[in-house]
Structure formats: C-alpha cells, structure tokens
Length: 309
Image (cartoon, rainbow, N blue to C red):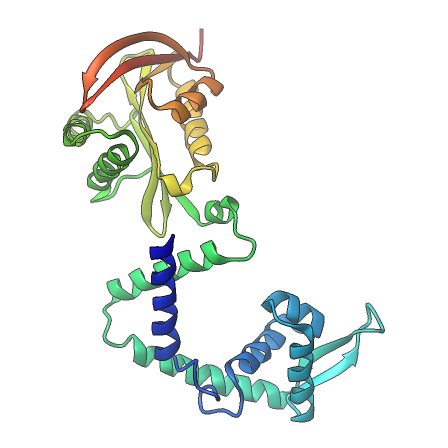
C-alpha cells in the first residue's frame, strides 16, 4: 500500500507541474483551475444549481457559490430562479461565458498537443488507455459494474491472441497456484495442437477485452460427433466479479447445446472458484486422479455436463 501511495503522489506532482495546474491563473486567463472547471461544468450540465455543482465536484457549497457570484458579476453567467424549487437558482453561461470557455478549451487543446507531440500513435494509445483505467478505478461510483461496462467481446482470433493467452495462463497460474514454467509450456503445446486441428465449423473461442487487451477467454473444441471439451477458461484477477466469466461460460454452453450431447472439462482440484462455477452450471465430477504436475501435487479432475439425451 505505501509503495502505491508514493507512486500516486509522485505522478500527481509530475502531472500538475506539466499541465501548469499550480499556476494561480490557468491558461493565461484571469481564472484559477477550480474556477475554470466550474465554468466548464456549468456549460456541460446546463441549468445547474450551486448545490448540484458542489455535489458533483465534491466541493464546499459556499466555495462554489462564491465563484458563481463572481461569474455573474463578470457577466459570464446568468442566475435564474429554478422552476423546480423557487428557493434555488439555476446557473447558465452567458454568451460572454461561452466565448471565454471556447477560448480556454482551444488553449488547453494546444497545450496538450504540444505536450504529446513527441509521442507516436502507439505511445499515445497506451497513455490514453492508462488514463481511461485511472478514471474508472478512481471514480466516486466505482464498482465492478464499471469495469464490466468497458468490456468488449469477440469470437474471431487475431494475430498475437494465442501468444497473449499463453502469457496470461503462465503468469496467472504461477502467481495464484505456484505452477512452474512447465505449465506454460503445456499451455503452449495445447494451443499449437488447437491451430493444427482447428475445425472452423465446430471449434470456437471467445475473448473478453479491456482496452483492446484480452482479460478473459473460453473455448469449445469438438472431440467427437457427440462430445466437446471446454478449455482455456480464464479471467484476469482484476476482472473477476464483473460477470464476464459467467457470460463467457453461458455463451459457450449455449453454443454446445445446439451441437453436442455433452461437454466435459479437465481441471485441478485447487481451482475452487472455477469449479464452483462449473457445478452451478450443472457440471458433475466423474473422475479424480492424483498427479504430480507443474511443481504441485494435486488431483486432476474431469467434469461433465449432459446437454441433450
């Protein structure tokens, strides 16, 4: 925790200095950062009260009211009695206020463009993705549902996908289960076999992506006319609890129900969270064999689900 706090504070110092946020007046205007932000929100929200602004920006209502009074005095905003509550006043920007805001936005765009002009497109994309994640994680209403909203899905493999899936399996299982490098080699072998034996009409793989990077996967491989195998079901730890694992599993099983009589999977008895999901979906344990694999002594288990009898 302490290391993370130091890094966040270090980034804050770097960011505020580079954007000139410590200056008393922002973007060569007569207004501070706080005043310009309130000006921006008045324009964006339209017909907003001081109380609404204070709540949204997590600021003291008295502080916000004083700034709004200054805007009205300078001719940047207009205050009118609220139609919802005569005790409240709604704030709108005047034509002068809109002109000032447009000027400030142009200056801000130019400032940011100058700041990132030395970056290529891939570097800009990486920076924007990181910023998007910061916004989601630090939002006042953050929850796993916010991460879920940012997830996209696809069922078409692209160059680099299999290599990245091998990496994710190796990294996550090493961290969480203590598996050795041997496990990553095993996963690489299974994906090689998948490519060699791929049956476009029956084999299927689904991917969940966040910021265009794979964060979850599941696959169905045809093993016979009646039977399929569920493989490579994985959810990145950060995205567990978002519901994407359940969605991938439901999608895979719906696909199987239209084509096969039963589906099976192989797992280790240590994968408690995944096994709980399998059982909830209707899978039953049919065999369990003790094994020494990937630096661990475990039980290799087979679960089956009958889809059509």
